[in-house]
Length: 439
Ligand SMILES: Cc1cc2nc3c(=O)[nH]c(=O)nc-3n(C[C@H](O)[C@H](O)[C@H](O)COP(=O)(O)OP(=O)(O)OC[C@H]3O[C@@H](n4cnc5c(N)ncnc54)[C@H](O)[C@@H]3O)c2cc1C
Picture (cartoon, rainbow, N blue to C red):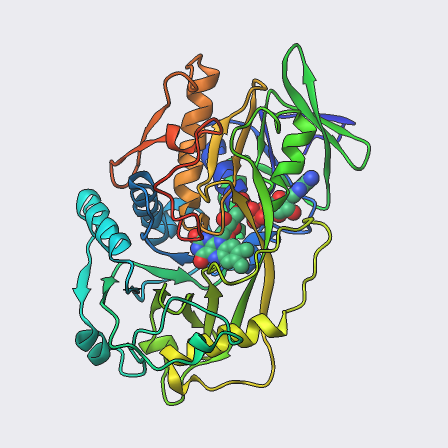
């Protein structure tokens, strides 16, 4: 590492979460001298560390489905993609499949069907009887729409069976999202990428109308003609520092989010027999969690409170009332799950954009790029984001007018075309979005 007061790199990446590390790997592989700067002590200590790391393809827009299908391939080819050893070992991708339950929202079911057919994603349609046979520990009654326990409708009996579900055999989860960042870091370092931890970016430097580097909280600066904001829930603060916050049509903000851990239904080895699932009828998503637990996340149903917070000052303890609501909901679907006394889980932040789709773009400040607004749903896409951002930076720095003519990226694994205009900071709110964590 350069130890002068002012170090120089080709590109500074603010953040070493899963996206920042994947961008570092891709850029350093292409010969760019990168430096990731993170205020935390290690890669993946930000919102990535508490990610459920579910890899699924149920997005509401065509580009979202295509991008997730492309992104999903990286996890299957992880060792090859990382290209080097990691003394901590490599992550495992658990391809356990995903069950997507749909009820009265037949329109969304039809849309996902249609998009999966278009993109060529394998799936199986299952009716309630077929699901009951495959998942005997689950009750496939129709209880929705989601409500809260203070609402009498919360306690009603099932109104017949759910309409059906889509089984996606290629979906799954990564059990250790922080380790995936370490793997990416080692991959980037093998190509010459550098990382600086326990260091906070406090300012964005400009010269002659373009970005020139960053100021750091230790009083030093780093010069670079390219700076990429990948600061997760702190992204809006970095955009404000760069003076580009106001020019962006789509904004980002930090949303508090809880995920709960409960013991698996009695007698079920959920690590073996369980799957990933998304259940809009009850209003939760789930996956197996080590120790034969079920990890429960909320789909942020309309009846649940949304808490936008200061990312440096928010309550990190589990809200017992919300925990109770989530677990009660889940026990309708998995009746033998029981209700543990102790509230366990994690609290973290989504970096939510106005339409819950990410922003992968340049900005009005030449040389300053953003990979932000990941809205609780972009862990799975990290590898594809690395490629997309590296292609974008190469094109824009080569003189391409991305704002006028959005770049089309060809996915390295699937050959699918990803229209990066869909992730522009200047887009209007995308009406096809689910406006939720589904993306
Ligand atoms: C509870 C939860 C569950 C989720 N579940 C899923 C899921 O199942 N599937 C899925 O695909 N996605 C999921 N997501 C979303 C996914 O985890 C995120 O989209 C992804 O991890 C974002 O990665 P990142 O690198 O952009 O951000 P982060 O991991 O937040 O990294 C940003 C980094 O920037 C650093 N930083 C911030 N400000 C500064 C500064 N001024 N100076 C230096 N460093 C700074 C931070 O320390 C941090 O390490 C979930 C998210 C959460 C919170």
